[in-house]
Structures are given as structure tokens and as C-alpha cells.
Length: 257
Image 1 (cartoon, rainbow, N blue to C red):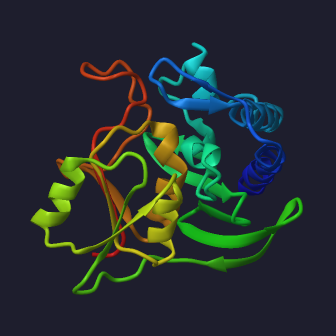
Image 2: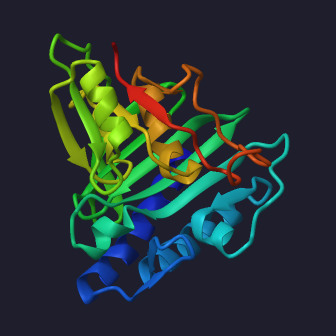
């Protein structure tokens, strides 16, 4: 399965880069977030690949959900897909955008792929192991195992480039965290997983497809993602009393603390 997810993410990444080079057409959703022709084209590629290989596993995909297409996932394993995470990064021609595909079982991300096509790297995890490779053409090469680092006396935090908040800054100040760096998209989870940084507090809105693949990689690398109340972040959150389907609460992702 992981090999198929890697191939799908790389194929989607190639399509994204073709549009990136030509210049994307940008529209805006009801929540004012941007969406491009790259989002739609990448999602079509991934959905076709998943449907052909795993016809019995439902797929929750960002643009499909925005169009009102939500599969029945009650009691089922399912895929979560964000075809272009960091659309603002893409539009602004920053390299920190990713393709995210994750498999969810019993509310937890058990496999995931995060591909950063502009950086030429891909991260993947399943079975409790995580790795990173370079992307050359249509394949990943030079896989290396990755793992979270032990947090030292002066931790490095990662924050959202576009969606930072007063609450996030307050958390950093409260915990005496001086060093922090703004990074776009799900790359924040991957940087924790490979031992570049120590924690990622997120006290602003995210959706499950934004986080699932990176979270799978982080957990396999020895880290964790917990809500502000200290519970593991779960997936498949539908019929929420105070928020929309698949919306995440605030959370803190961290390496080995």
C-alpha cells in the first residue's frame, strides 16, 4: 500500500509543478481560502489511483468534501487526502507546499505520505517506521530512516507561516520557548519527525486532511500529537457539536520530550 501511496503522491506532485511553472488560476472558497487548478488536478490523480487499487476503502478528500461529496466512514478504515496542502505557499511561489495522503484505522493515522514536490523530497511511514527520500522523476530514491530527537534545554518550536495566533505565541511565552521558526504546510510534522525541531503548537484552525499524513509520520518516528487537553488527536470526527465535520481542535505536536 505504501508504495502505491508514494507513486500517487509523486504523480500528483508532477502535475502540481507543471501548473506551478505555468502559473495557477486561483479562486476562493466560502471560507476565503484559496483553491487552484493544481488542487483539483492533483486530487483527481490521487482519487483515481486509490479507487483502482483500493475500491473498498472510502476516501475523504478536501476538494471533494468542499463540493459536498462525503463518503460513509462509520466504523471503517478510510483515506484522508489533501492534494495540495499550503495552497497559499503555492500561490505565493514559496516551496513549502505538500501532497498528503494518510490511512486512518480506528481513529488513528497508521500510514502516511507527505511529498514536497518543489523541494524534491518525500516522507512516508507505516508499520511504526518512518523514512525520507529524494524524488527523481517518477520515483523515490535513497530512502533513509528518520526519527525524532530528544528535546534539549532550548527547544525549537515550529509555527504556522500564515495561521499563527495570539494563543500560540502565548503558549510559547508561557513555556519559556524562545526559538521558533515559521514553516508552511504539513512539513512542520515532517521536520519534527526527522529531528530538526522539537514541537509544533497549533492554536488555530486545521482540518483532518491537513494533519493526518504528517501526524502518521511523526508518530512512526517516535513523536506524538495531542489536543490542548492532553488527549491523542483523533480522526474521523463527524457530527461535532461545536464544529464542522473533520475539523481539528487545537493541538501540540512534539518529538521526544
